[in-house]
Amino acid sequence: MPVAVTDEVKSSWADEVELEDGSLPPPTEVRENGYKIITEYKYNEDDKKVKIVRTYKIEKRIVSKSIALRKTWSKFGESANDKPGPDPATTIVGEDVYMQFVTSKEEDNKPEDEGGIGNLKALGDKNIVKCRTCSGDHWTSKCPWKDTVLAGGKIPDADKKSSSTPTIAGEAGKTAGTSKYLPPSMRGDGSAKRTDNTSMPGGRRDDTTAIRVSNLSESTTETDLEELVKPFGPIQKLYLAKDKQTGQCKGFAYIHFKFRNDAAKAIATLNGHGYDHLILNVDWSKPPAQSNQ
Amino acid sequence: MKPLLLHGHERAITQIKYNREGDLLFSSSKDNKPNVWYSLNGERLGTFNGHQGAVWCIDVDWTTTRFLSGAGDNTLKIWDCETGKPIGNITTNSSVRACNFSYSANMAAYATDKAMGHQCEIFIIDVRNADDSIGQADPILRIPVNGSRVSSLLWGALDETLLTGHENGEITIWDLKTGKKLQTTKEHDNIINDMQMSKDCTMFITASKDHTAKLFDSENLMLLKTYKTERPVNSAAVSPILEHVVLGGGQDAMDVTTTSARVGKFDSRFFHLVFEEEFGRVKGHFGPINSVAFHPDGKSYSSGGEDGYVRIHTFDSSYFEYGFDY
Image (tube, rainbow over all chains, first blue to last red):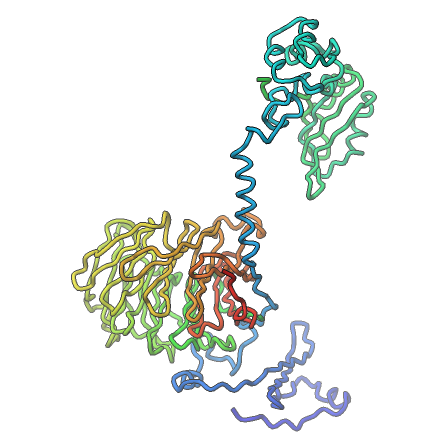
């Protein structure tokens, strides 16, 4: 390719102004120390004159004849009118990317770790684990007594069976081999009591004054919620479910009132209430749906 | 590495292929103009204008004189590489899903879709003197495929056999003298999207929607290696110089909008050929990768994606220095 002779060096801005009679300066091509610099002038969409400078690095490569021949082929199809060299419309130099190496060490460790957990699982509920609630050989979270009154105090295995059958408080105390004192309210089958005895203190938190509010909008905050339910009465506890990562509301909340009447009032008023473009769904908080054995 | 982005297509890339020397890179997409590029600087040499539908498959012959393309407009076209002019045009009953020149480029094979009441068929044609009359000429061989349709196709050793990958995951070797099945194996559970030969043609790698790529012996279809991923594999290629394979994939194009890009994992993934272990990834595409190809010199590779871009990556020295611990 012949090197374009370019002596039209614009010495001052005044010369350039003179050229602004509608005609554009001719494109120039300069080759110096291995680089080809092409300067073009164009009008952009706003009819402003823009100068485009493109710099190419010129590399010489020794290739086979067939490749060299193909390099001389003239362009065809949509590219028929393209100038020599890559057309910036179709060829873009991308951002730097790097190959992310997955080191073999990591790869080696991974299966081992999994294996470790797997082994633990296999051993499972046998000997390693000991329930904090009933000292049984299962995870505490899987304890059948998890949500019963037993959750409060420790009772050895032997006692577990006896307490599953309704017993008199005194008897339960006796059968407890370790003779650990149990308050009367904790004795007997807690699960049976719980559903009908509304004033059961201790054990699990009293859910009878709790209400569940759902269909809350994502942007709801605890303050919003507090303001919403405060008018109905004093609040014991307020829990708004939030996404761990985003911190946004997951759409539901639990509110523990001091008094059941207030809670009932809140349900009656708030259920179906429009809040933040959504219609709230409010009901009594139901105990977790799991069977007590 | 600074990849070169080739943006000559308006729709998803369907296949990319280097010529034998690797100086040219051919690309086809669901728009109807296959492109050819200089692989060194990404300059577009030209486009092959003439198809009316999505171009599903392309191939270029050994001497880079002729170019083959099969499309959804029920045609297979043979082009002159230098001028981009069509030489021959074969009308088929349904869209052409796979096409390949034989190694010598004396023959070409193509497979049609099972659609519009027509069954899938494999055709072997003589392309030595391809000209306008090729559309009327009878094929050398016409094999009706009764079962699952052919989704990928390769020529076997010495142009005597044909390897086909099917929609149900089967791989079949056909004897071209008799047109009979020689052997069938079913190691994949889902469609085989792509098959590519290793450099010496003793092995080939398959890419399947069943989330795996597998390496087979091309003589007896023995399963050699399995590369497992957690997403459909659309294309796989074997490095000509190192014991590496590259896998490109991602979830189906139809599922892209319903899953986040983070989950999408549109990276090219590099596995060790022998140990079947992943050792590297290259990010870049905004959609699933539909086709990958190694440069014949093994020093660069390209990928074409659902996003319509072809990316030419020239490996850094770190890639060649990377040693595999074992």
